[in-house]
Length: 302
Image 1: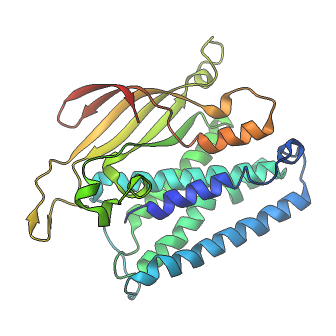
Image 2: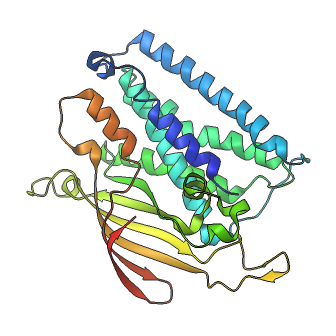
């Protein structure tokens, strides 16, 4: 199923980490457990997630027929772009959840148990909603992708106690959305969320964290991206008796990136802003290779 809901949730949850206060002292993470902060986090997260699920139920699922709970095997749709989107969403929501608990002085163990699993927990609830919707269904491949996103965050914290490899997102408009605006979006905002042809997901690795004795800038990353093109439907099929003739292909990218969270600053406001925008891949010259062996070089790629 389209991951428009998940990307919206990622940005909403992430931005909430900055909106706590305008003051530096308030944004400074607590060295020890701060009970008022922790309680505020628990209440605000519970309320936010509850209201989000209620809103999704009323504004999204209410427009589609309900059904008995059922599963759906959609692992072969959209050249797996939707699955990568699930990995991204679970990772970023979990990252935001752990960062908020860190701000309140919660122990590292509890950050991992209750914060980093926030994405998996929330997306599981969304998947259950899908299971009762005739339009979609509970997808085990979606669940596996959600688990992978959470695992990427937790695994790095256990192995390195830092996020050396982050998941990022970029987007450019394509010619496909105007052909099926109902599925791929109409206008930049909708297309950014729904047009898989223009989305790219990146594994962005911080070079200095792997070579700590080097003179490489601490903020410099190398990024490997995945995208797809030529998709008007989830699978190769007909739409309104029109045969889809576009050639679907996978695309792989190699580029540089900037880890905004590693830019040194004493301002906790700036640090929080950098954390928010660190979900977006910084445009750089990029090499592209598709699954047909065609190589391209982009002076700047979004």
